[in-house]
Amino acid sequence: MGRAFFLLIVAFLFIFLDWYTYNGLQSMFFHTRYVKLWKILYALVSGFTYLSIFYLMYSYSPGNTGQRNEYLNLMGGFVFTMFVTKMVFGGFLLLQDTGRLVYGGFQYVKFKLSDDVWSEDSFIPGRRMFLTSFATIAAGLPFFSLLFGITKGKYLYTVEKKVLSFKDLPDEFEGFNIVQISDIHAGSFDNKEKVRKGIDMINELNADVVCFTGDLVNSEKEEIDPYIDVFADIKAKYGKFAILGNHDYYGSYDRTRPEGEKLYFEDFYKKYEKWDLPC
Image 1 (cartoon, rainbow, N blue to C red):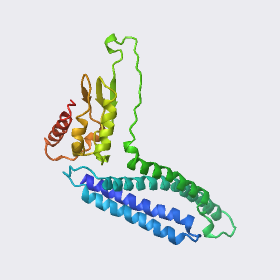
Image 2 (cartoon, rainbow, N blue to C red):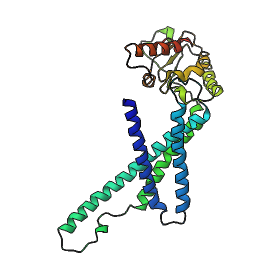
Image 3 (cartoon, rainbow, N blue to C red):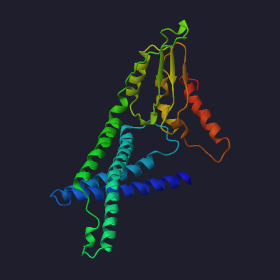
Image 4 (tube, helix red, strand yellow):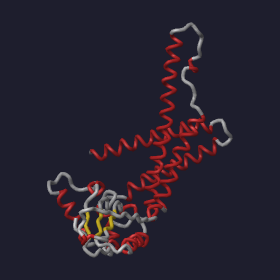
């Protein structure tokens, strides 16, 4: 019931953002010769977004443990990108509209207190093209950066090296190499070979110890299943260790049964054990 209510709220918010964004962009194109083209493009993008939402709801069924394919991840990322983009655009637009309403309220009070003849249309000024254009540019930043992230960026692995020194560090730890990895979010992957590339980079570091610091999955523990054999190839001289992250607690299990949570995490820990990783 709680999850269904949450999804309902998100759906209404998405529809409102869609309408609000359309209303804001319309003021930019209404008096141009491109207004029809813009309406068609907006309808196509919105239509694809809603179709993607329905398809994702159908595809991401409970117990679906298969590897996410590129198209499903692209659709999911596109929906999220559109939501964030419209949130940013709507936020800037809301600030402008709030200012317009406040100004209109003062104008209305001024009208009531004076004998001047005013047109009621003059109380609330129109949107400023400059501010709406600025909102569009600001919304474009997360749009392009998120699209890059869900298509190319997730496989652009980087290594950041840090040298730690302590006065009371035992001599045995001189040159000790700790490799820390985090936030795998396996549900975002869709290419096993590209994931293996990251594992190869880890092994090239010749770790004494590998520490994984959480968020193995986005939400469901089954997301890691297609990649367990890949992560099992991680090598460390003295061992591999892990903790859970906040996303690892988002999974679905029977919350009506007292043992539901216990069974869920017992199964989750077994997935870590398959790549020799105590958690």
